[in-house]
Image (cartoon, rainbow, N blue to C red; front, side, top):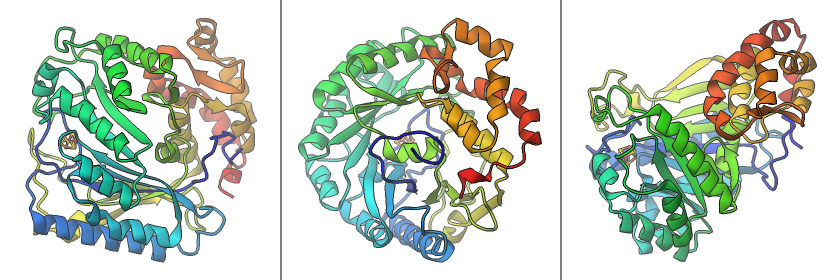
Length: 421
Ligand code: SF4
């Protein structure tokens, strides 16, 4: 058991490192991530050098005195984006080596897209230390791939998965988008999941399509909330029927998702690269950790705008913006949101551990909670409060409700600082 009372089997890491690589070869019509397709070799040079410097700064300067005890010498490393897999393996060596100076890297993940990473490059990724890949397959429906302005076809998505496995990756997670209006997707989700698994996929991350204002598809009418709820349950069932575990609301795999666990279970992580967000470990000044973001990313981007002016503004793009130290209420609120997304839910033991055992009583006697429990939409009779089946999709509104009714108890409690010793 770890400090939050959740047993995450077999995971040593209680600390993560995330590198956001914001480069893509083209821009997908639904994407609202921080990314650009307007870059050249010099931009990439600047990015990887700046990311390494930022990593050194955060590791050796800010953290050296707080590493002992909390970090336990093991970490996860995750290159996301963007599309880090479009770069050759040698681009990542310096950062992986730097992290290795401090930690045993338990899980080392790279994100890539089908058709961008060849079988040879997958082998090279393995050779420099990656042991897990996530592939932005999105769907096996050609029509939907065209709507999304993806550059690959269904066959390439499957080939990419098998190439990764043949190169020696024991884990290949695929992203699948759902929630399109009926008629948009011409394939069945459960068939897609089965095909990916046949090709060697070891897990599926589901993403309900949600179109932000600055995406090219924003004004289209292709999203449906009802369809999203239906397809979520289809996707979940298909994954569980194939023997995967549910790691989190939308993450299914034959394995633990160790880096993601860092976020879901509230452990600290540092993040580098434009658009990244980090959570520093606890310190004397910030006993509940401190959040920060990297880069002065324009918030008012036009639809499809992908321009991050790397050459001119490297300093601004790597500027660290510190938030105020987290309070114990911030900590509690964030944990309620993320724990509810896990199949373990919020353990009663954890409430005791942080000095709030009365919250258990308040939640267990709340009319809305009692009704949902009697409808088998959530469970309160076991080790904690956990959501069931499709109720996972309402996790955020449940978190808000639970926090509202716990508010008075939380404000009265004396201390919850034992969870950050
Ligand atoms: S969805 Fe992925 S590949 Fe497409 S533009 Fe966004 S970050 Fe790039």
